[in-house]
Length: 387
Image (cartoon, rainbow, N blue to C red):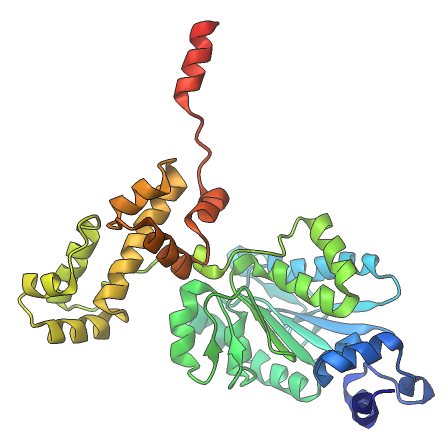
C-alpha cells in the first residue's frame, strides 16, 4: 500500500458515512491494485470515483421549463451504458424540482419523475439540465433547487451540469474560484452574474473534480460520456460512444459561436464605425482611418468603441472578417487563399492562424465539418455530353 493510500484510508472511511460510496469495515481497507494505481496519479476526489461501489446513486434533475429530452437523455444513456460494465451498478433517479412528480418542461412536454426534491434520498452524483432560453426567469422558477443542490454537495455528492445548467450550479456557489463553461450564447451573462467563476469559453467539458460543467445544448451527450468514463471506465465509455454515435472529440464551442455584433448601445458614431467595418471587409480600414471617418481622435475612438462593444476596434474587425470567412467556407468551394483575400488578408498564413485562434479549427477542418457538399457541374456536363 502506498503512503498516499495509507493517508487516505481514514479519510475514505469518514466520507463513507456521508457519500455512501465506500462501506466501513475490513473490505474497505483492502485497496485493489487498480485503486492503488489511481491513487498514485489522481486526487482524493477522483479516487472516490475509482472505488467499486455496490451502486452509484445518480440523481437527474428535471427542471421547470427545461428541454425534456435532456434529463431523459441523461437517464437513458446512463442506464444503457451500464450494460458495458456489468460489474458496476448505477441507480439513476429522476428528481422533480416541483412539489409534484410531474414536471412541465419547455413546449408543454412533461417529464414524469421518480421522486421530488423533498423525497429524494442521499446520492453520489447530481446531473443538472439547462435552464434556457430565458435564464433569469427559469432560475427563479427553479429557485428551490439551489439550496437542495448546495446541501447535496456539502453532503459529498459530485455535481455536473450541461449548457446553461451551469447557472444553477453557480447560484449554489459551487463554482466560486473554479473553472467552468456554459453555452456560448450565454457566456456574457454568466460572466456578469458570476465574476468569481473562471469561465473557459472554448471548452465543451470542464472537469474540476467534484464539479463538472459542459457547454452547448447537446453537450449533455459529451458530459454523460465523460461521466460514464469516470464511473464505468474508459472501455465502457468507448463502447457507449460507438453505440450511441457520440463524437468524443467534439469541436470547441468557438467553432459554433456566431459573433454578436453588439449594436444596441446607442452610440451613433460607434455604430457608424461598425457599419464601415462590416461593409468594407475586403479593404479592412485601419483604426486611424476609422477614427477619422467618424470625426474622433484615435484615443477617444478606441476607448468609446471598446466600452460599448466589449471589443477593441482591431479585435472587432478581426472577428467580423473571420465570420465572413466562415460563411464562405460553409457555402462555397473557393480556395482558402481566395477567401482570405476576400476578407482582407493577403497573407494566407496569418489568416489561417487568426481563424484557428478564434474558431479553434483550421479553415480546412472547419469546411470539412460544416461546409456544404458541392458537386462540380462541369464533370457532370462532360459525362452527359459523352453519353
